[in-house]
Length: 351
Image (tube, rainbow, N blue to C red; front, side, top):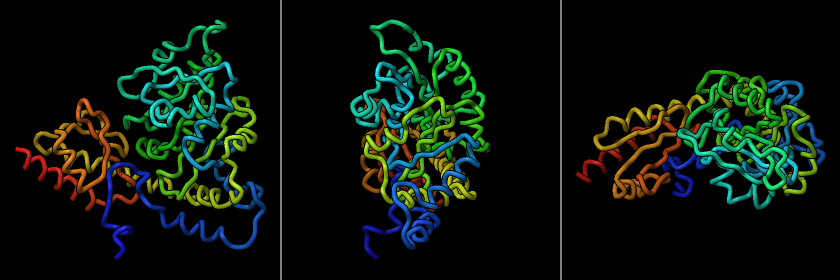
């Protein structure tokens, strides 16, 4: 067995570490037959559009891109003029983990707000929703939220609806970074549209890679009046795939049946199993609610360093010793139990 492809080697660093779901791989193989018109004028992209409409409504239009940073930048650029800004949580991926791409590549001013749990509220939005008409201040135009959040918390449909109503009353639009929106919907046992279209979200960055795609995310415009020029912006930002059928076929396979739901439910269940397993280990603290497939824990640094030699994961906060563990669609009960047992061994060795 080639150790570089050993299925026994699992990590808890990110759901991006997982491979491609077999049903997605089969969809790519199927799409590989024959010739198709390039740049999105193919039968697979047409079928993908219908699948997105079934989930998000007849007004929805999806624009496949290569990665999540691009989905966010293209979405936000299409929603803002050069003098306008985006309100987001301080922990938002667009603010902390995209290398400054929204501001550097997109030219979009971000207005971050500290939050206790990664979630914005109408009151928190108002901390940055001011200065309208002041030429000296970037004009607030979009509220961007993540579901699930970067801290693993989940917005309910009512919470998103309250944010959208509050934002729309102030002339603001709402963008949802949905890199893990499937996990959020599975955690709450609601349709995808309950967290998006029905709640009033205007534009969605729909995540595919973390839930089993080889590559590909999508900008999904839910209100056509909220975004303009997406087709041109996608091209300008080097996100127009010539062989788009291979991205579109993956989304069709993910969303035409229940693959997205099966995969998300499983990842979430493994997250709960992991949390329960490590809570019983003396000296391990789980400080945050486990609402989907992310588990945060506080460990001694030396324990984390030794454990990382056996399983890959990231430190979330160096100052506090907080780490993050992610479960994926292919995480097994055996993976979770082996990880918890290894953590118990390392904690016991630390005395």
